[in-house]
Length: 375
Image 1 (cartoon, rainbow, N blue to C red):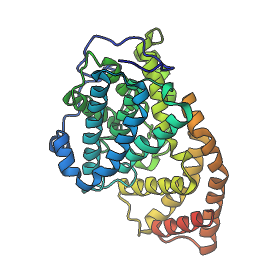
Image 2 (cartoon, rainbow, N blue to C red):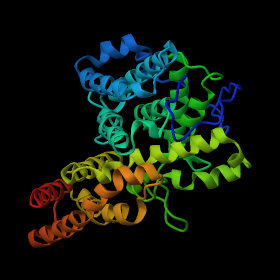
Image 3 (cartoon, one colour):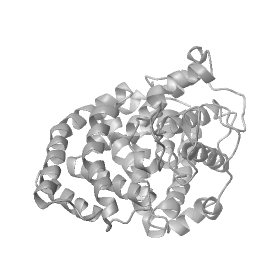
């Protein structure tokens, strides 16, 4: 297969197939659920996805065209792209059924639209800024699979192993099964399984209270920490000593940094969309905390999330981890900084002028009004 002169070349693929996660060696703990069984193949995905499939199909077609400079004239490249696209279709419908518009457990942020955002415009920007030759064909497939699969599971009990969250471990296990089903080989495609392992692990946001704090509902702390990707090298030093001498792991680590930047690049979207993503995260957090938006109990948490929480995430916790990510998204993030400060100040002023809010919904209304006044 021709990698098209990629700037980041994988130093050979391992011939050793592995049945579990390929780096950290966690025991298999997350079996298939009803959604995985219901959307077992592409035919089921197309049948269940129905009218929600065209936006995804448009992105897949565009991506296929973008990657043609990296594809060889043989069949291997086309077969890889076909396997990748089928896995994405299945993952997309599974997330829509679990936590999106096809199911009964809607998550305002982590739903199928999040897949479209990363798979579509964010990877598009990565390609437009750095050129398609910046990575190899298999690398772009890994990032596309990451976009579709990294949030497949969102309802696992909060627990961490080597800093990797339960949702991420469950998503990785399901992704491995999905790749198996779609024709990937754990021996011939060991590089892809390894990269999926590290990219999904690196997307973990540590939501635990800091040391010495009283523990409470982890959903309260959705934005308390940055992506594990920033510390992934240290985790590998501990759990896989000598990894820096293994080119395939070094390369997978590089992809994990890029993937984490794609995942958090909402900070670089046009300001109204960035503000909307913060609102969706807030809605999801209140849902996970079982708070009624029309109750007074939700007023201060919503206000805190949309002011201090957003400021801390944007200015203190968020960092782009890769050079490709910084080049692609850094300038747009910088353009949003001043308006985010104005949004936080404006929302606080609006709330202060109107008096103590009676509900989170009132705060969200004031938030929308403040955003509208800044554009």
